[in-house]
Length: 501
Image 1 (cartoon, rainbow, N blue to C red):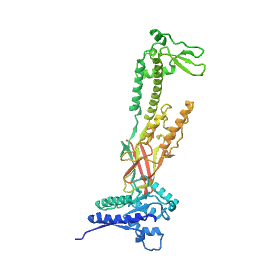
Image 2: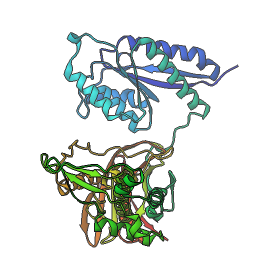
Image 3: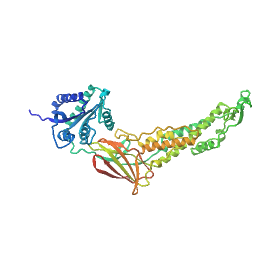
Image 4: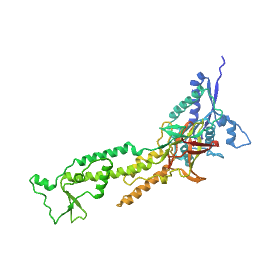
């Protein structure tokens, strides 16, 4: 009984140093045809310049090979080890040109990099460097595999060959009428791309983090209110013991310790604003705690008093510091909450990848909050804000949306400790601003009443999404935004006007 068999052509594209793999490829194709091809009525034929090309005039060598059989192949397998190959007019080697041409036409390419040891005397380092550059181009894009032994390559190749061609055959082996990318801009909500973009407001002021800070301060108030002190003299009389005698020629008691006016005001203001009842006299009473100064070591101070008094002074100092930190968090959170935020991703829902994608965003002048306009936190919280707030600006990747990963490398500039608080604060603010600029990496322009942001996405796979470099921040709520997208493999400029409800 006659059977219909489907034939697929597989191009073998390897530089001259890959010989053992060339033999293995032919063997594994034969194994595929024997084990899977017959029962599924499919067959794979290999194509290689050594057996499928013929002498021809009237063109350049690689172009003639492309016309004779390369571009008619359904898929290709390419292997690199130490040689990249001979350059062509447009590409670094004939193998690179064949790979790129087939990928651009939507064909499958099985790409492998060999990591076997090689004799140093046999390695052309210029060729090897070209391989590394080519490999880096496709790093992280799921296009190639590596192997260290021939056995590993053999297993990988047969597995990949089987998975691809059986799946292709089951789906009917139909190729799309036209292979192209389909680029657009989508909103982001809860890690998913959405068609209806939403401008949102933040609620940092009402976050659990801020609430926790306030709760801890309230506990400190309760702890200090429960601390009732008696003076050291009263303690001595109570225990019928003599008070400590100070040798005036060694150290002298200078004055009784008191909580400073600014600390008392800060603490009392917080208590009043948060309905905390305190008796100011007893709350700041330190039980007659005194300080002594050594005439031998200038500026050396020690406290004279009960352990409870010393501990209460420390608690009041910690309370003051925590309130100052809390106030800075509230002030900074309110500034962030006054802004508007838009989370976006670049989407490719076509049936082929795209490269060199240029995105332009047009925003009515005056609405955009640029990096230099984003508020910088206060000195006491700025380092914590680097951990908590900065990640919010470039969002987190999810199962459906990849992270943007073309950020510049941040220079490691250490913060040198100074005795001056002002100098330390200045350094930390400069560091914070540098990190902001490394997140908001857009190029900014102003033209015809619009602020224009641009950025480049080097590569985007088909059926894939990638986050914008950062969340877009606005001083006022926008009513619309316009986009333009240009790319290497799209002949048209994609434009879109997005209106917000």
